[in-house]
Structure formats: C-alpha cells, structure tokens
Image (tube, rainbow, N blue to C red; front, top):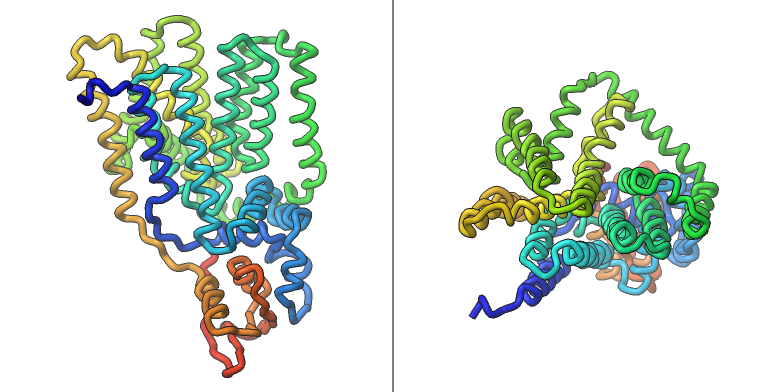
Length: 480
C-alpha cells in the first residue's frame, strides 16, 4: 500500500508535518537580553534613546503609544546599531495585529521558519524532482538545531535565513533557466532584504556576487541587468545613508569587545577548531556535538570535503557540478567569513552558532545534493538506505531530540510577569528603576491598557499601585 503512494505526496506530507511542527509544537519560552532589544525597538523604544537618558520622571501609556511609529522604529534600530531594521519593522506591524504577548512576538519567527521550509522544499524540488531527496532535505533542515532555535527566537536570524534562501533560489533560476533578467532582479532584491534583516547575511550575498562574476564575467553587465540592479542598490544605499550613525555605534561596540578580549588572550588554533566544528554541524555531520574531541572534529569536517570531492567526481554534467560548487560555497561561507572576522577582530565573538544561520539552508541542500549524485553509484538499495540513515539522518535526529529534551527556559527578566500582574490587579501606576524597564513592560502590555510609569533611580524594585494600595516586586534583569 505504501509503495503505491507517489513520492510527490510523501514530500508534501513531510513538508506539511514539519511546517505544522514549527508553528504548533509546544516550546517553553523566556526572553533573553537581545530579544528584549528587538521587542522594544519594534515599539519605537530603545533604552539608549535620549528620552531614556534624560531626567524625565513620568510617562503615560499614551505617551509611549505615540512613540510606536515606523519612523521611531527606524530611529530605535539606529540607536541600537542599525542592524535588523526590516525585522523590527515587521515585528512592529505583526504585534499591532496579533497583540503584544511573548507568544505573538515568537509567532512571527515561527511563521518565517515555516516559510523557510517551504522555500527550501521548492529549491529541493527544482534540483531533485519528486523523489525522496526532497523529503530528506526538508527533514534535515527541520531537525537542524540552529533552525529550530532561530524559528522560536524573537530575533532577525530566521528572517535573514528566509530571504537568503529566496535569494539563493532565484539565483539558481537565473543560472539554470536562461539567465532571465527578472530572476537577477529578484536575487538582488531579496539579497537586500536579507542584509536589512541581518547584516551578517552579507556572506551569502558575497558568494552570489562572486559567482555571477565567475560564471558570466563582464557579460553580466548588460544594460538590462544593470537596470534590474538599480532599484535594489538604491534601496540599500538609502538605508545606509540614513543609518550611518548606527554603523558607527556598531564599530564602537566591536572596539569595546576587542579591548575586553585582549586581556583574555587570543588563539588562532581555537578559531580554527571552532570553525571546523561549525562546518561539521552545519553540514549535518553532528558527531562533535556528542564527542567534543579534536580528532572527532577534524575527521567530521574532513568528511565534508571528502563527500564534496567524490560528489564532484561523479557529477553527471557541468550544470550539476556548478550547482554542487555553488551550494558548497554558500554552505561554507559562514564558517569562512566568521573565521576571518575572528582573525581581524582578535576575539571569538563571531564564533557563535546564530551567526551561521543564513548558510544553513545551503549546507543542508549541499548534503542532499551530494548524496543524490552518489546515490546512483551504489548498487545495493539496502546499503544506500542504511548509509544515509546511519551517517546523517539518525545522528541529526538524536542531536535534535537531545536539544529539545534538554531545552530549559530560564527566567532572565520578570517584566512579563509584572505586566501580567498590572493587568490582573488593575494597577494604575508603577514605579520602575529605569526607563528601559518601563519600555520592556510596555512592550508586552495590551495596547489599550492605561498605566502611568514613574522612574525611581534609587530603587531596585517595581512598585505597583492601585486603589487598594501598593506592592513591591524585586526587579530581575540578566543582561546576557
């Protein structure tokens, strides 16, 4: 009976199952520092804004709501460091429709994660047709721990991953389907969207640009192609023109990190081993996640290059070879780029799993594309199936299961609970130690609730006042 089901139906069932799991799977959630910044910026608020640093002592909900405009979202983003404006703007709109609960903030990322799965499904179908490699690609992406985490995080990484994947898809269409200018336009447009979601997606865009020059050389600069690139270039130029202050703030932030790291020392070997480990994990050879030994890391990373070599040797034609090269370059771009950032900066900040997010769809596709090439070279069906499950799907599945089981939502901020208490007890005034505390509480309050915020700099408590008196709640805020 199962044999009678078409591969297309199986692929659609796998896709639908993964999409539903991303959106509806229970996930304990407590926000951490970076997420609070995204939440506040989406409301046009920033703890480092002039208002927050002034001597103003009282603010009403009405005053805060008046700041909740798209221009102020941009201004708050620039004060942060100009990064993730497109995400903050979407979060601004999304929560205005779905409300200010933490689950609403997180829902945007879940939906973006679902869309990423759909885009990768479409890409896999364009490569493999309707066979089980499409399902394998979707499964390997869904159980990727980075993908799982970012699709439940109130940060811009999953949006950057989505737009990077769309840019990659339209690029392959341009490359393999007649070099149509419309596909080049959408590649550039979604590349800009990826950068405006998160600046680090630039490593994906750089690979796409370099590939255009390698494949087409000077012929890429036709009049039609140049015209197609004008609008995306204009959009990103306007953004950076008006957000230059934020870029300078980012540079200052990096200088502070570097100064702090100088006292701790810096090792090129540590960067190299960290890079090799991320190569292994991103390309689904997750053994270093279980055995964090140098030998395991080196062997796992080396296996990725061995797989690349044998897939290239057995590629059917030049188009397949070119696709293989490009998927590998896109998949490994994060590791190479972030390692170079570490070497340049003299610290390890770039060795962070979130920063690899934008290459994950491509490293996943590379693995299934390489296996698709080699699949026809092994004669015994059972050997092929066991090898696929044993080397990739099973370890990734176990790694995912362990990550889900060990996930523990740790309370870093009690501002959400304070907001709930305000609504429950009909609080009309609250004293806060800092305006940043008021901003965060306001960010999760119902839009129509009225309360006055009063700053008391010498207090470490929230003091909630209503008709029955007042109650103090000690502030909890772990900014890391």
